Image (cartoon, rainbow, N blue to C red):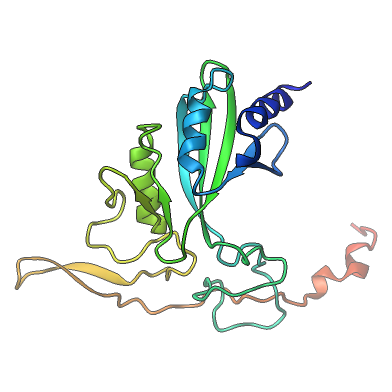
Length: 230
């Protein structure tokens, strides 16, 4: 039995139906856990002697808006270029029929030298919400603040949930796929008021590269397969 199979057997024997194994790359182990079971499962992963995941390596938000939708989907130029969608739409096979937001937890067992990843879908669309895992791993404090700042995920029970990367007066959450690339507001120093002021962003969206697949004779199969005459 391989090392990852040994770990999977230990996790599933301990947690049973509370976790669902997901497809992952070779050498990785990923499970999905429900929001209601999240803290309890995390605590058991930490405290169970045969698992001993005593360290939270990382925690990140995930936005599944337009998940699986290709950028290059047309042979005609569009008015939006590479800009991202502002409305959540249903696309066949895109995976957007479930909750939009999720959080991923990367765990490490230092004593046993193995890793596991958890994925948990957030409760609700706006605002997305999960219970904080800071009572399990203190390191989650800043990670959850980052996920709140960039994705807008609220963590119930967090001791100090406030922005950590953007300014306290920042509007919106930059890593959301519906967030405009130019932002919503800009700041400047106002000499009359003697302080920094926020104003609506003055940058006008500009399409640099059209979202289009071009028909180009250089890529004609006949020419590409022709013998080199050089």
